Structures are given as C-alpha cells and as structure tokens.
Amino acid sequence: MGEERGPGGAVHLLCLAASSGVPLFCRSSRGGVPTRQQLPFSVIGSLNGVHMFGQNLDVQLSSARTEDTTVVWKSFHDSITLIVLSSEGGHSELKLERLLQMVFGAMVLLVGLEELTNIRNIERLKKELRASYHLIDSFLGNSELIGDLTQCVDCVIPPEGSPLQEALSNFAKATRTAFVSLVVSGRVLAATEGWWRLGTPEAVLLPWLLGSLPPQTARDYPVYLPHGSPTVPHRLLTLMLLPGLELCLLCGPQPLLSQLDPQLLESWWQPLLEPLRASVLLGPGALPAGFPLHEDILGLLLLHLELRRCLFTVEPSGDKEPSLVQRRRLLRSFYSLVTSTHFPPEPGLPEKVEDTAQKAQVPRACYLVSGPEEPGTGWRLVALQVGPRRLLLLLSPQSPTHGLRSLATHTLQALTPLF
Image 1 (cartoon, rainbow, N blue to C red):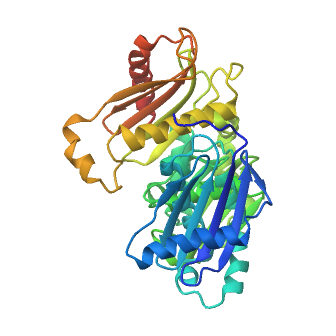
Image 2 (cartoon, one colour):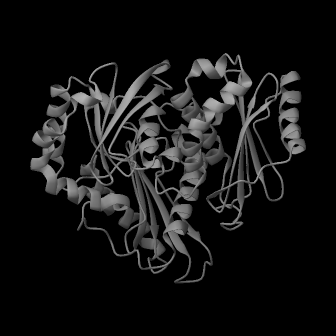
Image 3 (tube, one colour):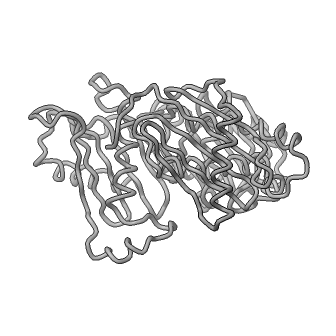
C-alpha cells in the first residue's frame, strides 16, 4: 500500500504561468482540510526552476520523491504549469497526476481555455481564477466522491429507476434540452442519453461542481466544457427539487431560467416526490436500501470502464472500524495500486510499451492485507475485473483470505445489473 504517513500530511498545489514562472495561485490542505499555509517564494521558484531547466535540455521532469514528500509537475498547452507536493500517506504518483488533470479541467470549466492559453493580463487572470478555488479545494479535501481519481462519474442507484428516468427524458423533450440530469450530493441519480455522452472531464466535473457549491434554490451558471466546448461557454441551469437533490440542464441561450416556473416543475416531479425523497436519503450509501451485501464488506468501488461510471460507498457496517475517512483512504490507495501496477490501462488512456508486451499475462484478481498479517487481523482488500467491470472491496479482518475471490465474484454478480 506504500508508506503510511498518517492523515496529518500536507498537500500544496501551485499554479504558474509557464512562460514567466509567475505564480497564479497556491492552494493547500492538511489532513484533508483547506489551510491558508503558503509555500515560501524561494521554494516555488526552485520547483519551477528545476522543471524549466529540464525542459531547456529536452528532459521532461514529471515526478520526484524525497523521504517524506512526492512532487509531480505537469504542463498544459505550454501555458500553465501545475505542481503538487504531498506528504500525505498513500498519495501515489497516479493520484497526483490525476489531481492535476482535474485541477486544470476545473480551471477551463470556469474560466475557459482561451484565457489560460493566451494570457494577456496576469492580474486579471488571477482574479478570474478565484472562481475555481472552491472546486479545486474540494479535490484536496476528504471528499465522499472518487471521480477525481477514477475519472468515472460518481453515481447513485435510485430505488425506483424507471419512473425517474422516464420523467427525466420527457422533461428534457418538453424543455428541448438534450443534457439533463438529477444530481444527489455530487452523484448522478439519472440522466438523459445526451448527458451520458458528455466527455471527460466535464462528465465528472459538472456534478462535482454542484456538490461543492453552497445550496441554492436555482442557478444560471456559465461553464465551459473542457473536452466539448473549451472556448464557448454554455449555461448550467440548476433547480433544487429537494434539499440535496438538484435538477440540472446544460444548454445554450434557451430555455431561460424564468421559463422553468414552479407549475412546470410541479407537473413533472410532484407525482414522483416519494421516490425522489428516498433517493436523497441514499446519499453516500449509493445503493438502494436493503441491497444484499455480505456482512464483511466495509466499502466497495464498482467501475464500468466503458460507460465511465462508478459506485463508491463506505457506508456498509458503518458502526465498525475503521472510520469512514480511513475506509475511503484505503480504497483510494488500493485503486491506485491495482490501476498502476496490476490491471490493464483503462479505455482512453495511453498504453505503455511494457503494458502492450505483457497483455498475454493480465491479472484478473488480486488481494492485499493492510496492517498486521497475523490471523484475524488486518483489513482485507480485493480487486476483481470481469469484462468492462472492475470491483474493489474493503473487508473486515474476520474475512478469510481463501474466500476473498469467491465473495468478490458473488458481489460483482449482484451489482452487475445496476449498470
């Protein structure tokens, strides 16, 4: 699992103009909580300087490790350089690389690519980037979501899926909007086909953005789509149907927010009030109440790598150790481990030469015991891949290692109909 340095480690994120090295912002967190701590300018200059020195010699410096810190550099469009330093336990290079991709995606989402690649006024850009701070800080915190790492859309399975999906599709037709979804605390509950066709990273960023914003009855929010429309803004309309549940429309000039009057909303969603309320209660549980899971399961992550959707929950047996924060940390670290070292590259990601050469010997399952290896101790982690689905489970120390693959197989079979 890598070196554990505990939850008190710090993460520092630096954004600089690539050509001049001028810092645009610095965001920090400690133990998953945002802080005002800033790195000394000398450290920022040194980190950027060594990266630029390598570039001048046609050497790409992507990462480095010290005894207690991992550093990752990444340049975007030869205009923006992002640097992240982490002393938190379990932060692999894969996690930090994907963090930087999400951060740049968030910058494009709220500022637009043109402003980032054609910097005319540094001070004005600094002010515009403040709009992205709240979203970026949520990536540095102890989020209940995992799409930032998996690059799949966090989902929740509604207790009554068909009526909600039918109502959503009919509502989209009535408003002449192809991109409509229902979002519960940053997770997609249901969406139109158009919404599911959104590319990465906006498919992950849009619901995550809603989960990071303060509650509002309605919003008319300008956004750029980093993949689909990075230079021309769209409108993200949101309407709160219930506390924690928002109806989202991604559209152009029409419809106006004023056209979505209460009577229109009531005619579509009032008949489905009970299923909507039940869906809000799911929250981090992600699965319908009463879904059959083995009593040893403390957390799970299910990914459909072709649909780019995932289910992530650490709610089962919530009264047992470890804490929910620690469960999320364990599953995140295990995902990074199996993705970077064991399983084949995910669809859409570039393959390494050694990956191509070893295709004939691809593992389908692996497990890990985190902590003491004495009988009856140490959390069990098991991963299983069958076709496009990948399942990761966190299990209690009482779960026998010889039964891990069988338990994972039966769990995957039960979850497969969900998506």
